[in-house]
Image (cartoon, rainbow, N blue to C red; front, side):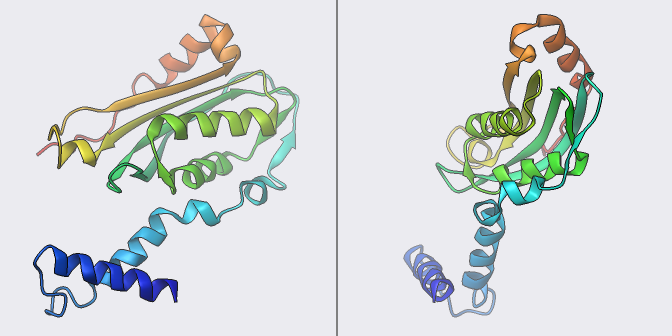
Amino acid sequence: MKKQKIHKYIYDILKYIGENPEREGLKETPKRVEKMYREFTEGYNQDTEKIIRGAILHVDYDEMVLLKDIEYYSLCEHHLLPFFGVAHIAYIPKGKVIGVSKLARIVDIYSRRLQIQEKMTMEIAKFLMEKLKPYGVGVVIEGIHTCMMVRGVKKAKPKLVTSAMLGLFRKDQRTRNEFLSLIGHSRLPDFSI
């Protein structure tokens, strides 16, 4: 029932902008758009607790763990246009580590919601801080925002970089610098035309 309502709304939008929703190229567009939004917002239907269950391991390790260049795709909550890029996550364990693939899944869960990059960055950091109770967590996210590229100021080059530093990453400049230097060579692909 929900899908059919959404299809109708998209159909009506196509009519509103002056298109013929019945023409060959647009007949399936309401279904495709509904499916796209479902994919972009699947994070609302995923349980973070379930994702990490059984993935936290007790180990005697207290050096930095870093996973960088985690690709993500999200939707800007202001215009419902995509933004995308890479996330870098580091933490210093206090007796517990998490399976490395779970870090990427956590990024997926939070990015597959209507978002602003600043909020997503902090949500990821706080989640890891709460669940792992490490000495510290650092998250840096780089993003290209199509809402800036195709509308408004129409700038294709700017990249937004956000960070969340908790625990030692906030308190100890050396820890922060080590993290930032380790991700310093990371680059987003050049999407400019």
